[in-house]
Image (cartoon, rainbow, N blue to C red):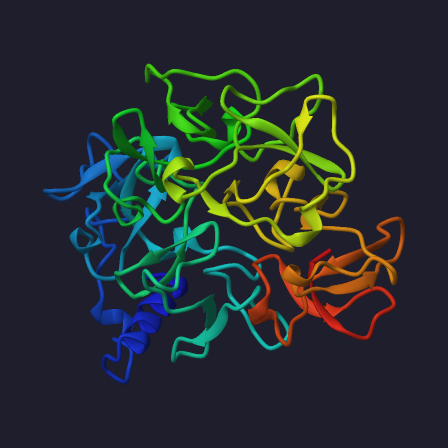
Length: 386
């Protein structure tokens, strides 16, 4: 058995409060010939109940899952996008090489964000953290239940995560999808910008007032123009039923509301911050803003972004930095908006003066960022790792 496999098994025993010592490797034969993880072919088949997958050139004995309980102890239920399924896998297939979930770690090679460098009891350490429905895992990982109740990395990307399946609430969907109204029924879906944001077999489509991943063969009523929460201007008006409203330097598609019942499922009916009560400028198609409005749920200060469509209302995307982050410019006479609870920091180079999230440790920051001093300030803020 590989060292990585023994490490993760030991880690699971420690997290679950099991026995004090790891099982000696010579007593384990989880991955012997014919069992999960062993090579296979037509002339050298897997044991009964397993299938020979093409995960590797030599073949790979595995079994379908979930439920995760169907995988033998010492294996995990991993997502495999290329095969459009989830399979029982050896834990080492999930390991990453840098500070994300599943990576090895040490005092000089710390974990990202709020991940913990957990001792597996054998002298090796791995980045993870306990998880449950109230404490979800970072992007690119999922909450595993076997062999441990902790965050495990997705392999080879993520699957559809329940996309297109019927649901009654968000609890019926995967960790990265939401239960949204789709005509007369509710389905699991997620927001998107382009088709590439969706897994194989799904496309990014405008339906009702939002833009989301839907099965390619679905017959839907589509609306032209940007959907709720997307940027708009005089040459790109909003979808039917939405207004192009100016908020500071940017204009968005939205609609007025009196209760959440009139808003799409991926939005909420909220009063606008005072700074948007009087728009500073607007394209010819923009209307005077009124409060409250249906506001799309997306991101926060410091969230990853590729453009302003990934950021909350009124924030802009600085995408010259790897991964990008959502922020807004500020100055001594134009401080950060109160609702952002942010610090106004002057950055080096051509990034100007922007609002950044204050922090006391990297646990306060999203994955891919760390808590540190940047620019000319002595304050600690969350900033992307360069």
